[in-house]
Length: 396
Image 1 (cartoon, rainbow, N blue to C red):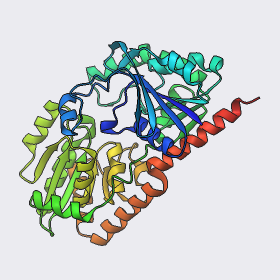
Image 2: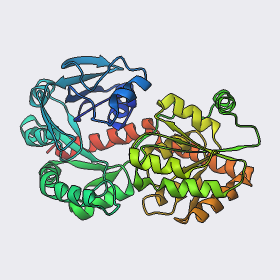
Image 3: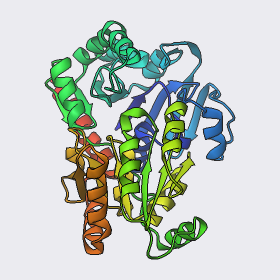
Image 4: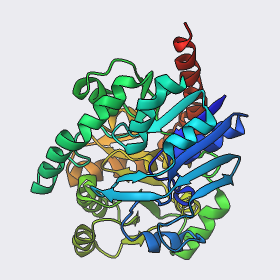
């Protein structure tokens, strides 16, 4: 199958779904191409992130043109302009599609420029169009604020009309979570939605005893101490203050490590409230993060994130705040949900701390769930099935 992925930004240094899908589908024997811009996503502190992962690149810019990468080809077009933080218009989308004549186009993000081009050309070029969506609200953070109110207006007036056009042309739409699926059905009134969870690189994220011993030795954690971890972008919607307060209320053997970067003002507030048992580790590469998960005993999160599944892949039992977007992540008996209070977090931590057998069972359940349902390999095969059906449904 000749597959063309269209995505505004791709940055293999940091992973993400569009990279993993292309890599895994190429490994399955398909002819895979990624059509994108000559820039990577405008992360805050992107130069530091690139340095931390040892990238040869020093900034967001990448050479325009075609390059072979891990079994698939990346077609980068020159940027015309960028607006609204992450809406980018770039050359080469139509030219690449006409030159490749793909059987299926997988467009990432319904309101992006490249998706709109693919939607316009699909009938003429006779390919099936599959569109995915990762968001599940008109703002990415539901905390009430003037900023989020303005983001909501921006989404409804500028992004949603573009998305509606593209979605109306799609042969299939993919959601990455139950919440995203519900959002697509309710907000956009889309019926042909398939929910395929984001996949985890289960080969990279796996429990390793050598890494466990090394990391625990480096940070001074004894065999009887319990290391807790939370990872991902640090923002107020993650409710890390509840996690930190709850952890500090638990057993004195507890140590907590917070991995990630984000809202500097919020991070400063968290640092000021934490005691000496809490460490802020900053950004870590995927390999380093896998080692930290291996060294840890319990993972804690306040909001859904791909890092939760990565922790599951490393056999970590979970403590998750009891919110609607978290419920589906504990369906495999792989952790405990807790009340949205420091005491609720503390009680859940204490329960797992005092029951090593429960920790081991829940951690093993999480790893099995990743291997059977949540790996990048499983995700890619599921997408291939959707592509095949979309193609066959177009045949008279």
